[in-house]
Length: 562
Image 1: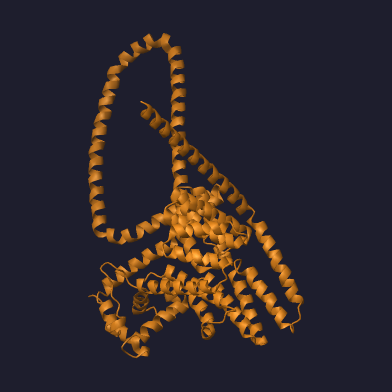
Image 2 (image 1 turned 135 degrees about the horizontal axis):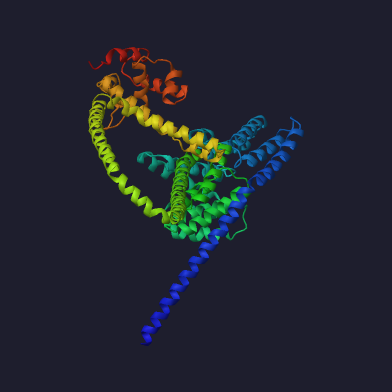
């Protein structure tokens, strides 16, 4: 009995502890998002403060003599750091200015520093090839201790990002190995007391899948007296590690801390806000997920980082679609509630009126019944006549229905193929126009805006291109084989079963149909003119015939289905 009583107490205690921890966790999360939303609302104030700091340095730069090259170099470098996490194109501009001044000064260390700064901003913008180009001149002096840490750090970050976005295992493994190599080299050149030393040491462990050790070291790093941006970086990495470990609640807390710090420091190049919105979306917190992804979208376009725009574009439509679905369901629920309540109200009024009039007519009922009995026979006769007419009408309706069924069958047999491909587009566009008109008439511009943004033009474009591919292959069933017959063996295009035409095949499919202008081809496929020119040049260079004769040869070789 004592054992059973003790066990029961333990169970009650554990339930109480679980309830309290859950309650505290929910309360803590609510406070975090309350603070975060308030910080997002005040983001313009933080940006204003950032612009004031930028203007202060810019004013000094304007007043500095052009002959003071070293001073102007330092000021341009300060402007670069001011814009580094704020606006990519401005940071790049001042990075170029610094490099030009360093070239005039003829100081190799300043030139190297400017090149590393330019490479760093290129990595932040997703311009990995350009980053490596800026670092290429520094290879011959890699052992220079003045810039070795930064040099290898940028290389490690560049190859790490390239590995993350590469979908080819061969290159991904190569990039991962290079990233690890350069991070370790950078770590060996750091001072043991520096933030970068502790960060790289823990980060390398995380990349080696030693997550628990890395989490402990990053948590210790948070206790140090470091810059706000450095702590935001640690919070982001901790959030990512906790997410990998399956602890989403702690991941959310650390991502939120990173986002708050980024907004306060006007850091527009941030991945934490995208990660946080994605976690909240999966958790079902659409309200906060929507607020965060909208902010992430604004920051990505303001900063100009291409990879961030892609990441935001992957989740923003999903959140907006989910919100629209919830709104529509709620509207439907309220609508049916309104119908039901209104129906009950109308029925209640009708019953009240009926009872009232029935009470007044009760005394006259006997006389009415007597008169009604006399008229009953004539009414029955009229009813029989009506029934005969209804029967004849039913026969006519059956005949009409039979004719309609025959007409529908004819439509399905002879017109179904044509209308099926365009009906969906028409209906979707019609619904879209009606919905937009409705919201505009209601002056509900926010819903109209969300409806417009939910319309996936890219997917509709892809469907049209797929229909184009199918129609084209029906006309030219041997086009791919005939195209490959003009290509070198290693550049022949092979399509899996059910796969549609590639970008290159679509371009030359349009050419085969008589559309030869690059501007029109680019407009149809949604590419830039330079991209069309690049694809055509690539194909011609990889053919087995003279590149100037490739187009004409392809036109002669392709045969139309008779």
